Image 1 (cartoon, rainbow, N blue to C red):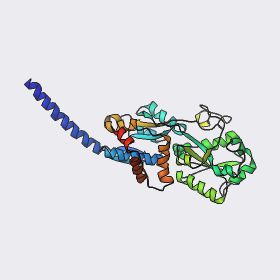
Image 2: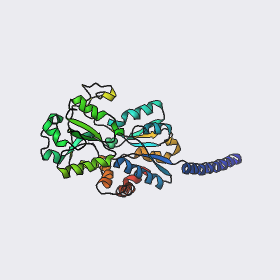
Image 3: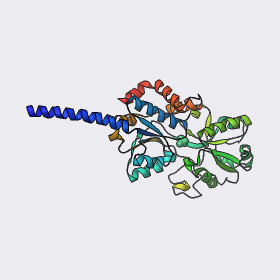
Length: 317
Ligand code: TMO
């Protein structure tokens, strides 16, 4: 009995050393969260950072790029990829999982869509009769209402940054046989898409931009164009042909990826991460705090946490 008590005492002492060691380890090994270039992703990064700090962790917000961040998660340079959009990120996500080192930490509670579209006033003002059906874009009278100084007389589609989807949209125009009337320009960052909405409205010209849902524009009057239906492999970059690559975008999930060792290195943070599951209006709110209300990303995150404190606290337990 005495021996076992001593052992018990030793075990407790050992556990206390372990506990203090693991606290030191946490301080030395910050949780690394990627920061990309659209508002909800950045605000959610700050939400997680602020919550993890409340839990006693240190956090690093790491500038990252959309596709290559999955390899960074795989090898542990990043711990998470908290906004993984099926339509545009499923392939690098599954490739990293296949190589080993990246795990699926669950999905947010919503359906995603990423597509070219128009603000509703473009339809209301009759700048391209027949929209949102894509066939309206075959009309030269429509296309000319969407020309800009840099579009060579063609109608312009303003895509997101080229690193988001590469040639998907230029190939879409070719696949639809309307690349003689329309051309794609790439925005430098998401901000340029919202600036384009304002500029086109001021100039009274049509505009087609890449956009997504959930986003702050869900509440602001924006319509996605109806393209031929998506099917698995229709895009040129997924093995499709010129005949099929005119297909539109799929509806999809919004997943959370994690480095395989995150559950072991930061168990409580990982547990929060697996429970954290936002709904569409919450993603819209994160974006709206920045893109409509003009808050900094950190302030937008703090406001979001304050507005959803009970939910956040539930996920922390
Ligand atoms: C990945 N995004 C939401 C910008 O389309």
